[in-house]
Image (cartoon, rainbow over the protein chains, first blue to last red):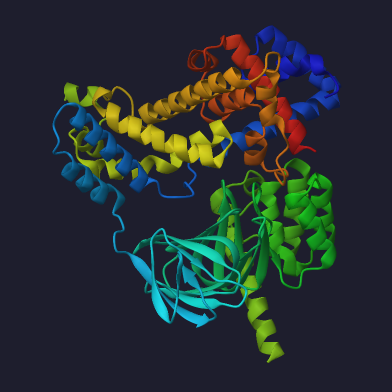
Length: 360
Length: 180
């Protein structure tokens, strides 16, 4: 900030709370001082960004059951205190209504090799994992887990996971470490896997997800799409693409499997290091037409002039469809962004499939 | 009709939940959980704490539903309750920490939020979460939730002028982080 003494006025000007006299004086200054004019523009960009933040963010876990249980517990405690000891039934009814829980729910699991364990019990041939239970494989064991009736998860050696929910509308695992390969045939958002770096939400797909002992992850999608979410930071990873994930940072920007090394290195610095704008420019410099999904994800992750540069590069590779305008995209209009994404992923899908056909 | 108009904030689900219908309260949870979680998350800057506060908010809402008179929308009532729950917990946590901190170290509490979060990059949510607690609360309430400085002053127990100063500081810190 070249003129820090103007900070209050610039903020009040951007908020519309400046006095008329101060406004006139500031406007005169702005006409002569490009640095302050730029500061004002950046401030407005920030306010625009704040106003465009999503109103709602899905909680990482459904707390309905826990809330209902606590309400029921308090109710029981109050009634006991009041000398009325017949509240348990009401509490249980509330728990069942609210949490739609789970007693007896579970998924079947089959031993593939070695000695997988459910809790402390070793799996001889097959068994059942209940909600809340852990399934663990050591270095020499593996297992096949049924995702209710909608798919299967191949649990590789050295994996520890927990069954979190087994309801028709919510099939959910928590992967603490190790590798799973999931194949699911169901409507989107029915199956999800929580990890230390966010949640992988199935959009009808097949993928392999690895989490190391520090909670860092890698997802590789081999069919359909996976959405990876952490605190509103969202990466949609299509077939043929990867994304790295990190605790406290969430999913990185997805990249295709043949993305150039300089692009991958720049993404790593941008997503998880201190690369900032310089790293984003490096991504831009090495991006090819095939890296359109990476550029699309960069749009909301950079600001101002950089976002315009990303737009221009992406538009050159995959021109936006009719009705998707530059101002709309730069303002992160979600409808326009989604329409463009559909075009980009169609093109990417064709490219991946064509490459598969050519290989054969 | 006048009665209905005066109770415009009371929807069917709210009315049934007030009468003790747990299913109706579950509907309210499903409808509002995302919005309440987002608010808790932005105010706390911590996903784990945000989940706990969201849970507290709905438990408190259930217990206080009878006091909701419908003068405002249920969502507004719930969001104000959420702000109060988060801020009350923050005050309690500050008191707990002050009891165990050696004298002369209170600035440690403010610095706690300043630590750069690995990988936050140029993401606005990440930058907000990395703000010091006071500046973050004012920024979220003013620039994201649309509260006026006077309301923020009442909620946080500070003067409106202090709220304004905190807001401008928060914006400066955010811009510095985002433009890095």
